[in-house]
Length: 80
Image 1 (tube, rainbow, N blue to C red):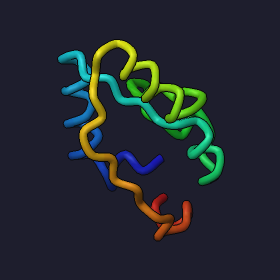
Image 2 (tube, one colour; image 1 turned 90 degrees about the vertical axis):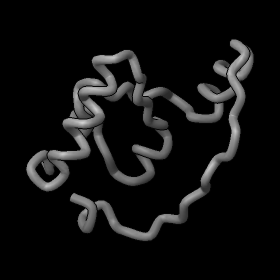
Image 3 (cartoon, rainbow, N blue to C red; image 1 turned 30 degrees about the horizontal axis):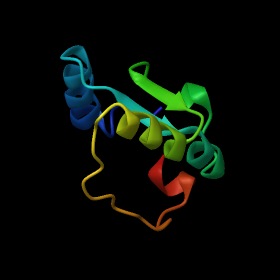
Image 4 (cartoon, helix red, strand yellow; image 1 turned 180 degrees about the vertical axis):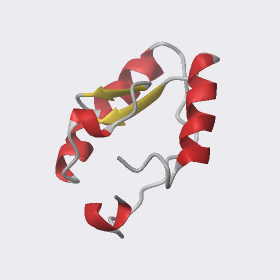
């Protein structure tokens, strides 16, 4: 929807996804913010729960270094 507004960022993310970087979004948070699956670019995977995803990757040997918890500052309409 907002491709033109965020073109540079989306194109950069798409490039990194082609190099193997995985972009994942918490399905619970997406639902809470009013997003639908079709609102995300095709290279973004919506996972059921960010917490479960983090636990899975930590069990694979990855380490969560420093999470940043953001408060909901903008409405979905302001972002879109």
